[in-house]
Image 1 (cartoon, rainbow, N blue to C red):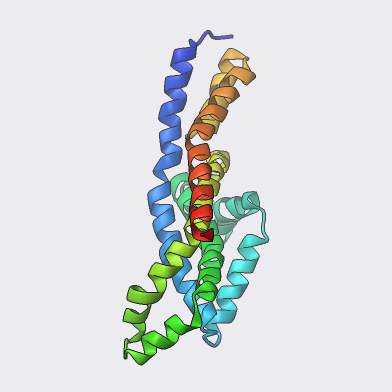
Image 2 (cartoon, helix red, strand yellow; image 1 turned 135 degrees about the horizontal axis):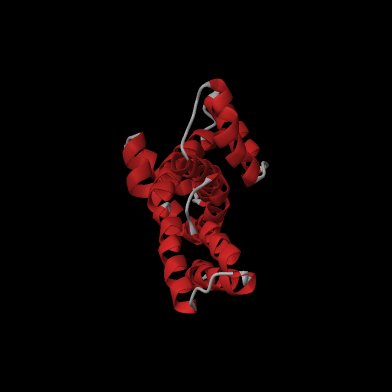
Length: 214
């Protein structure tokens, strides 16, 4: 058993947790942009594309996250498509975020009053201006609590990618635990980091929900 001070454990795990959080910007950017596009396609029931988008969303939402990781990292190489651990993490997290956010945005589109769509058409706004100036700002306001909730889910999901070799907080905690043989200490620190980040976001999401109910 190797002795590692508590402060050393906290510092090592803090640095590893930054790797978890580093995935967020690109994953959320991809999830929001593609999620909005898929939601609009499904909302307007574009032939073929809407059916394909629905299949994608339902398959991803109905599949275990771990299975998606293994398919991307271990399954695709059999087809000649290979990604390293970081690429796999970004792809898998982006795919799941896109699927869930797409459903969130579609619900937002349905929640916008039909008069807003009709008023935009009456003003002669083209499709792009109608959505960017009128519809999407309202959708973002309506769905913001759910978007924040998805951010929390994404943060928690980053722990799964340790299984394909990404050096993040859970993988680092296992390494520390193997050296110190004190699993409660290592995993307790991990839990604290996730709580410190996720709990404020959850509270913020609840406040947004209450504000939207007014």
